[in-house]
Length: 116
Image (cartoon, rainbow, N blue to C red; front, side):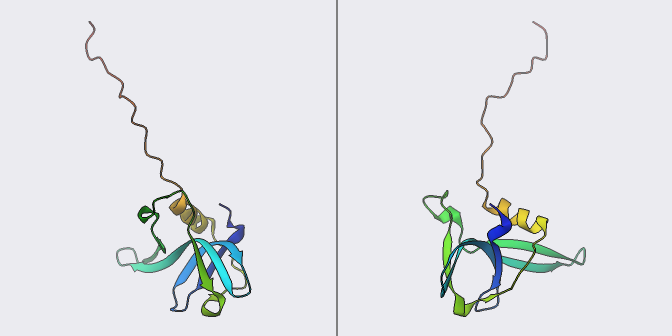
């Protein structure tokens, strides 16, 4: 996934969303794998925490390998002219959508404690 098509925009209720542009017409912006950007203060460190929450969880889909594409009416969103995203932000977004690969269940090696 490349950040060349990565876009951030505000929806009609003021949430910040991020995703990759799948396609675009005069009236519709199709966004692949959109996520809601949530920023909240951490009371212990007095720093801001960033969370990305998927608009829809792939765990609820039969085919989890397919990207999710949501269509947003352009007259109900606000776009920025240009944003240069920090690499940590892009990495967090990309890692969120990277397929989970379970660890292999290979037989554990046997350790001999005593010579025979």
